[in-house]
Image 1 (cartoon, helix red, strand yellow):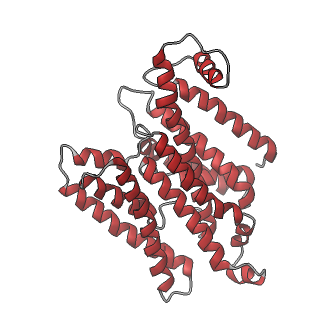
Image 2 (image 1 turned 135 degrees about the vertical axis):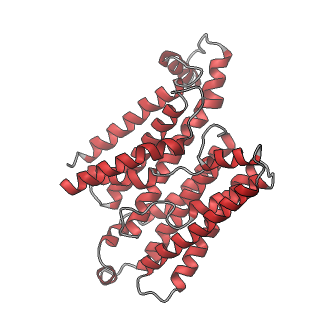
Image 3 (image 1 turned 180 degrees about the vertical axis):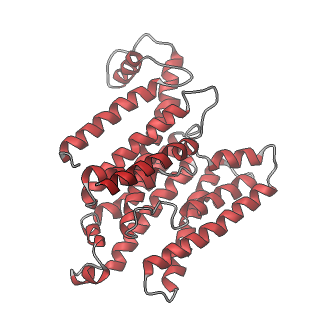
Length: 335
């Protein structure tokens, strides 16, 4: 079933605004919707509301950065997944397919193990993801296989498995009372410690990663054709694939560095977007980003609101993502 594209975009934007307002008021310190609106209006020049200082602190220093981070992470993971699924012509391709998540995990885990500061751990995670993909791409393009896409997938799986073993080794050597809980918590993902500096870094890396995707969005539809047909159209296939892979890698590495490993968003959301608007990449990309932001925000809001202890988003995305993926695959088969 297809929908009116402008109406769909408008509906998703409206849903994001409503979800954002609800998220700002939800949590262990609840804020009524009216108070949230008055605090927001005060920032726009309205008279300041007669509310406790705690309410303003919670909204602007804790919830605000967290909500923005959840929106950004969901959007860029969905964009990364959509790009990689187009590159590999495989709807099961995910942002961690080329080892970026595993490389980021190694960088962060080593940083925690060595007692680095939080900014150094995030930098190590970002660099680790980029290095892992560079290794995968170098080895994959050097293999004497005719199908370069298959080469990258196989090398990505192998490198990801090797890096996963490195993470397991570091967890075995880590202090079980201090380092191991920190490593486990980071690997499950979290928005709890997101600050202004994290948001700035995430935004800059997200913009850098989105630029190749936006510039190549019209040519990306050519990837639905065979390689020979793409060459016949005069499209530079290696450059197109490399541009999309670099953009997707920057996006994924940025999210892992800021919030840890959060799976399933980049795999499931592009499927849902295709059901709504089809497989054309220029139409798919904005819808996937809006859906990813909405889903990630909903998951984070539920995770910090349903119990005494906060549930890591990586746990909830796995619990929700697998059944949703099965449902979407059944819908595609019926269609």
